[in-house]
Length: 128
Image 1 (cartoon, rainbow, N blue to C red):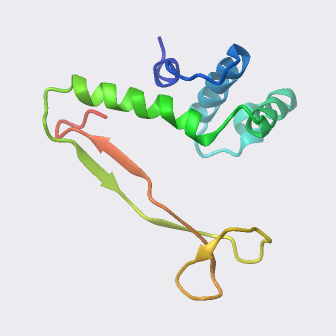
Image 2 (image 1 turned 30 degrees about the horizontal axis):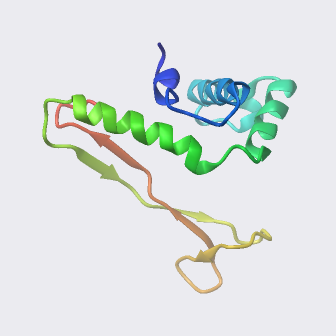
Image 3 (image 1 turned 90 degrees about the horizontal axis):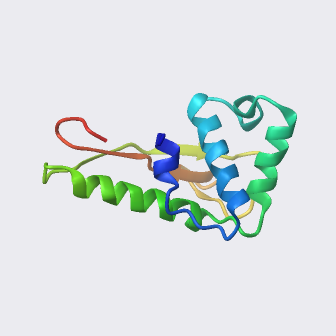
């Protein structure tokens, strides 16, 4: 079983085809994490299928993340270490000049965007 299958083991989108597509998208993104969706997907049909997946009303951020959270919690429970280091960074995503609703104030009043707080959890032995 590969990493994406483990992460998505508990994913329930109500349709097995969506769950298979989620794994395919995750694998594409893992192969090329720096790439845009079209570059990561490698073909127009795969790119279109990826966008359709994200537009599907049955797919939600909460549903996708729930399986990942469960897999992460399971890995934490399996560790001998009682210490988990949460390494975090903050990045500003600046959307000035784009007509996007729901953005907040960044460093100054006219700067609009959001803050991203990526977090990597590892043991002192560097196990994720």
